[in-house]
Image (cartoon, rainbow, N blue to C red; front, side, top):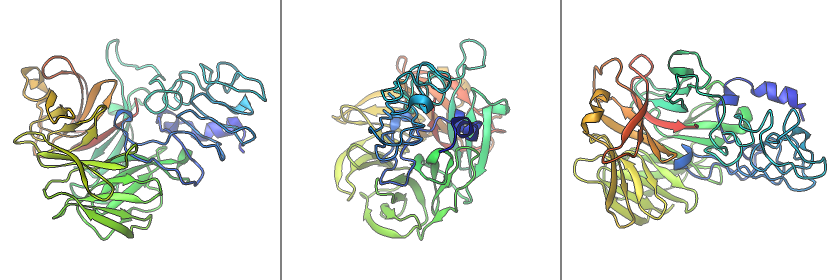
Length: 426
């Protein structure tokens, strides 16, 4: 085990700010298990009772007698709290006795900072924290975000941290995904990878399969996993370590592949075109997606569990399940996010042609997440050959009246070209 000071120095830089829920660092039967709408993507639970070294997020509970040094986040119950992050005192957090429990609090390493206590990398917030950390350096009343943004116009992933980066737009790093075309990249998910900084990687789908990036610097880990398929429009990691790939073919399909890209099984999706993304609910193991106007929930064998219509003229992109039944989804050209209840009725519409959005020049809504009740949407500009220079690429909408209110934007035509999906840490 490295000394704490050495271990911390190895993570100083983008990885500290990049609020990744690092869970199941050891190569166990633990993975992201599914997409997670309100967290911006997928993440492990942060519970590893076999060997919880470097466990971040979730409850972070260690079994008595286990090697629990370096447990990060959550309630931080450890045998030796001298290396636990998230306590209320001591240089590295930890307030309990050596043989007792050390609970997360507001310590110098943990507390409200990015790596423990109630901060984004430990506790109860979006990535296991309460969304606190470095203060936003913008003028009072303005908003900062930390997020990933896929640009399929330039075939890159951008990591943006408006809290800490002094680069234009808050961009920390940009990484080419090694594949061209409109499908590269599309979906974003966090997955376990022992070769990544902190043990978890950023997985993005590309036209032939998927790529995993190191969150510290964006470098591709290993090599892109390219399969025999084309038109891959989404990737989800499964609990056994295999990956589900959605293909926009005729018929649309989901293929389950190994780490080498070899198929273990596949199944057809319902008839329809324009499969734009897939998301997987870890609670049920079901997949959610859209085919033009229709949204679906299907089992891991492809049987339809639930479906609804988004309305004429829509081209669904991202679909997320809704508490109490139903879904949220983006509609493409109508540039809206809609909420449909379990009875298949549209109960909320955000965005659209409301005059208050005229300056944003809304075009096409693709990937999105929901955070603190707001919708953070990728504003895809691929249908516009020459958008105005300052047309925003990512927009946050707050439900407020009929169409909501835009409260934050990011991007211009220098920073990005076609943002197709976002993954928001805080």
